[in-house]
Length: 342
Ligand SMILES: [Zn+2]
Image (tube, rainbow, N blue to C red; front, top):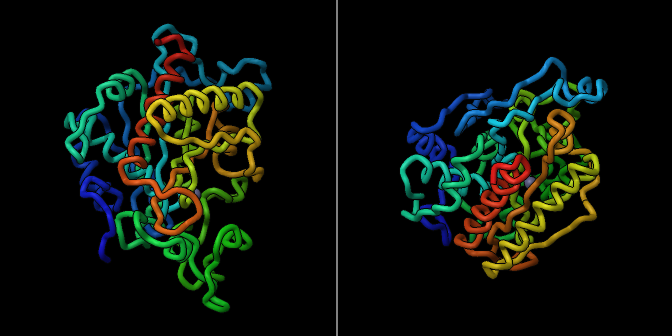
């Protein structure tokens, strides 16, 4: 399908993931799992965590009044961990684009546009960075183009949420969440879902979650990230971190601190941010489940997708990319500060 307004450096397909991961020498690439459709889910890792994993899961450790029984982060040489997860919804790959450019720059010194970001590179080199470029490759595979830049809101609804089998109408948002799993009820299965029709954001996490979701949980369980961000696209929304609803007060306050720092940095660059402390998404969804495994903030970031006609501003490719890089920078700075490393 013809690309509209999509720069050559905008890498986001599963082939682009393979091409970028083939460059990885400074980091490590691991196949975490296979999706419902049999596609590989990759983890890319830079730096090494020296967290001492303990003798208990988080719940038991908190029950023992000693979180170190889950993960001991008290050592002077502790290196904090940042977990960045792309394309949980397969049609929201703005984050994937920025992650692939980040990996390219770490590996070769320049991103896919030939640009350098020395401050970000310095910060990234000081943390333990864990990346899943595409968490839902089945969904990503259903979208035959590299970006939604310049496409219509109806295109987005069709490809992301799909159509109903009963009458061919668009499932839409949030109507696509009224049936889960949606596979048998859908005609065109939207990119929200894996090949079994599961939406990772809204699984019953206590009852046999999908392989895709288990891969995310395994990182929370074994790496104990200090901050985890699911990189989503939210049509033409203003850049926003969704505040959690089911986090303890201290973790909520960490999200608030990060949110303010991100907002200030964006505004200094002339970019917009929408701070929503109220947590409008009150459902118990994937980042909340992750939090209950690792005990540190896990949030959704909603990027603008550069659509032609959706409500809100239409961001350019450059602004979408820059916004993600600022987010990555502030996340690194936040976790380094938290552990007294800067
Ligand atoms: Zn999403």
